[in-house]
Length: 113
Length: 110
Image 1 (cartoon, each protein chain N blue to C red):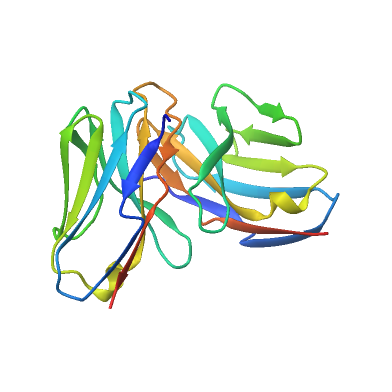
Image 2: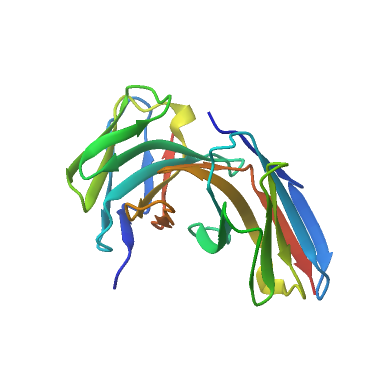
């Protein structure tokens, strides 16, 4: 099944903890992204990697650290979780071309208590 | 950076009516304008897109128009059905960077 997959689907944790979300795509795409969708449904890009190299790094606290071990994987590690980090996090991927249709993963709902 | 405004934020229509969602963008360098549909609890999925060298594109009941001079683009859904109920996002792209509008919650009443 060709797709963008994320694990876990749900993540409930206490403030101050460190957690990771994993993303994998088997579409052969060169570029991967992390988006945050807040409670008002606003979708905002956080990071983008192209062939394991960081190309977009929006204004995100440095508690968030993406890691791309290879071009099919882009993981997101979050240190010292805060209440405001509660959101749905979407991974996406796209081919490297002028008009880049982005394919989204199923999302990870993070709840910080 | 790019800024995308989307209106209305909510839209309620009767089944069979048409729905129109409008977006404006700020950066004239944007050259790709996708529209995504997000059903409750699901991922955003591309439903139609338009490139900057095209003024209009249609796919069955959905169509998009682009006015580069005015920097606005619109999504038109005809003969709406209850399964069209979802949140719709417009976006504008420069290279790999997609900037999304705030979303429109469309409700189609049977």
